[in-house]
Image 1 (cartoon, rainbow, N blue to C red):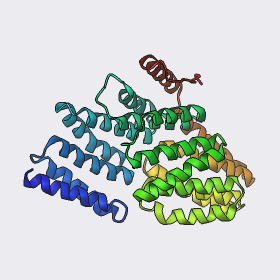
Image 2 (image 1 turned 30 degrees about the vertical axis):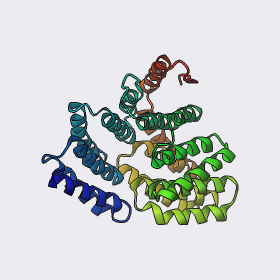
Image 3 (image 1 turned 90 degrees about the horizontal axis):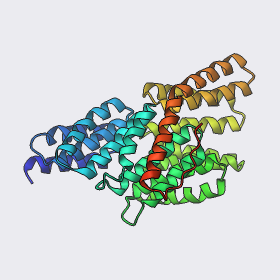
Image 4 (image 1 turned 90 degrees about the vertical axis):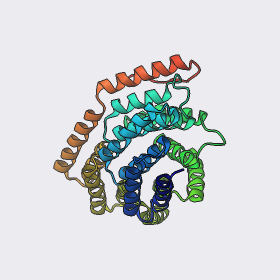
Length: 348
């Protein structure tokens, strides 16, 4: 190991340590590591440095910049036959396009991740791809299909699976079960997610755990508990851009349920503003839907119609007929590569 590699490793370790406590410093260190790694470091270390830089850029909602960090790493992985790394990078490119609302492109990347012909792709790559596809189905309100893909992700979990990834899968399962009104099952999985996130001190996911604790408390009519979870989550989510958007949405839903309509409008508008600034298409249409319902409840018909129209425009922009055709094509590919895979896909 040369001196540059030693320095890059130290920068990466420090960047990861400061991810939540000092995110700006963490990003600066990751950027420095990525630049230094280009000067004669081993290919895997160059990829690792670009990966950390990408993670922090994504955390700040800088999705396009994160992709610029990822693409050279993908070239390095392909040139050096680093298949496990290539699969992981393809997954993250899928995440970027999903976040931007470019669902068909995300599906293309995740389809490669699930191609069993890519035999050296890691289990984690398959898990993440199934999680991502489940999220697309979730955005389409196809909650049973979302749950199916997230259950398929469980097939790839083993004793060596990273705890962070296990927590990510659990949180997505909670989202599905909550949407399907299976609150008892959702609570069981949420308890598991909380135990994991507390153990590994993953503040981003812990913030999501508190969001769902709030929603489940609301479903039980336990407003005091819901408010307590909201406030506890508030101390966590400001470390992570996506978590803050979700927090504002859940806070707005909590306020609306308790008749605090003006406060709920303010919370939803904060979430909408952040989502627009970060180009977070898969959140924007959802927030307009909540605002339309809230203004309708308040008897403000023009505002309700305005947000309902924007909800429909954004929804149909993301979920065009070609998307469902692409999903059906993918399901057929998966069925052919693994005939035992359950499929309940029905074209919309």
